[in-house]
Amino acid sequence: MITLVNPNLVLQQSDMFTTGVVYMPIGLASFAGVIRNEGIKCSVIDAFGEDPNQYWIDGDYLFRGLTPSQLTGKVSPDTEAVVLYAINLTYHRALINITQKIHECLPKTPVIVMENTQAVTAYSLRNIMDEILDSGVDFIVTGEIEDRGIELIKALRNSSSNDEILKIDGIGFRDNNITQYTAPKRKIENLDLLPLPAWDLFPLENYWKLKYAHGPFETKRYLPILTSRGCPYSCKFCVIPETNDSKWRYRSAKNVVDEMEEHFQKFNVSEFHIEDVNPTVSDKRTREICEEIIRRGLDI
Picture (tube, rainbow, N blue to C red):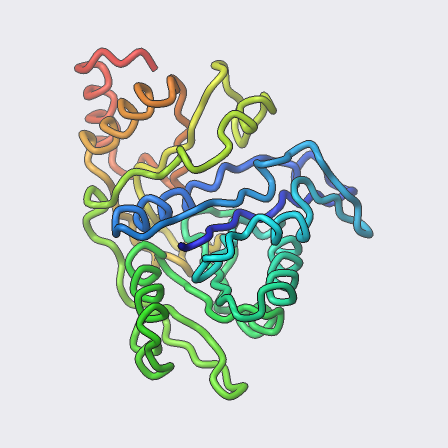
């Protein structure tokens, strides 16, 4: 059993509007789909989504969702590893708090932190690796999680040595108090081969009941969707060149609309929020997606 954790939404009290934006954890949902596709049992604890209206204040910050103690109490006894999602820069304090509580209550359970490579609001974990490891994290995964994350989980299951784990690119950890790290080299070239995000593991109804999200919406149900990854430009104010090497990769129009159609049928979702950092690099592909929606007669 692998337990995936989405941390609390953290609001800065002096800027509640900007820091209070709700992002659904699409990167974590994608990894959940991959884990399940590998035949590995997977559970999700969404610290924000499971109780979004509970909150507490710590100094200048307001935290929404489960407390670290409540979250730790939900971790199954048969959990082999806990994977925390570094979804957003503003969530970082919650991530550290949760890590410390898990390390305190479940000291023998490996804690992994995965990078969010597909959001301009995210942050590069390699630049603060020591701070994260100091909090009790055992492994940090930088770069795309889907391939190397599965490799790390299998290595932990096989009790592989640190030397073997170091062969997996994008992994950081401590060995005899020395930080070891190999920068990510690989990118997933064919995004169409990835399984769909496992949204059925998440408390979707709680997100929909909030009636607000990253973007405005008109229907009662919505889901985010990633139709591409990365961006070909090198804007210096943005984290994406660091996490994507200024490259843009995309899913085919058929694959994108397949996801829309499945979630339309499965969850009765008729509104999709495109969360790509730069979705319209190719005008041709944008038109193909629109034409495929029209061809299928999808009412979205």
